[in-house]
Length: 448
Image (tube, rainbow, N blue to C red):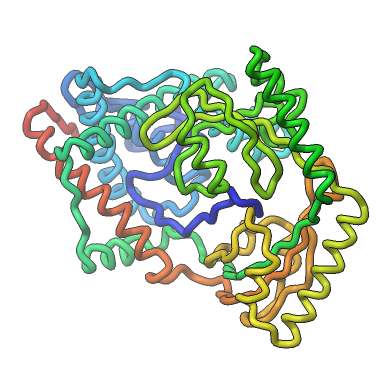
């Protein structure tokens, strides 16, 4: 669990739901009482919404039929609600297209689709099973599925950018749901919430091998020499691929993507990144990882697109063995009653989180999950190792104190209350705006 690791909170499945991974075939067999395979169910401005669009959205929100209503009446109500969602979304897309300040970059669309495609593919053990499911969903090829998904993501980004612009200009006033509305939403949709997984909260002391002073000096010297070449005109990305010791960004030419303040980066790294002008290479910046040469590619008020080259001091066997011995001694001191706070201040690796709030046990890295299995609140987990990529001598050792443990079970109101508040607030805010759009736009709902 590195300094960039973040927890994922439980979230409600809201009507304006999640991104797509698969789709229901528009060519599904019709019900025996309906001989029409597809038809127009609403017209928004000059754009028709088809019955098949509702069926597509059903699978967006309920992949593989998960958490669907079990009665015909429930399914009918679901389709009515989703039609209203599609109408509101179409109104927002049409407004976004009329707003000349809204510019959705194709690169952003492509990146978001790439993520969704990878996520979908990872759910299947074989390529054959993946392609079979895509065909079952109504697509002849993976490319056809990708094209459809691309259009869906473009619309989502248009809406997101447009509503963000409205909020920024004060034209979209936030609406806060009442406690009664939140409770009513939970009661209405509680069967759709996933089961609550087992969760743990913990504090930790992560102990890393400490390099010898002469190894640190050699790393600094190498970083200085690379900086000289970069300032003579050497290509930063090519140099990163050759020298950087950060395995996650090395092959990307040192690219870390867009970085926002306060998202887990080392404070010194962050401060330098936001102070640099685009294209300028920093002096070596020392963090607990080593020495960084930083280059900002693009800059916006709240975020920067950044690259870096990381040079780490060498760690030898003696350094690694010392970390093992220190960890054992620290664990024994804690077992004997030493204050966790005091010990943590002395020994904890500053690149790692100090305290992790409640998180599903299944979402933890394997080493954490295995060590914490069955450990009750208030007790220390057995010491475990975080294997370092590439060089195992750089592995860190963890002492974790379990502070809270909640067993698996049905989701409780308090588990999702804040998620519902946030999502429902967004929904109500958007609905208030789209109600105005409906009064100014032809909306013809054709129910029969």
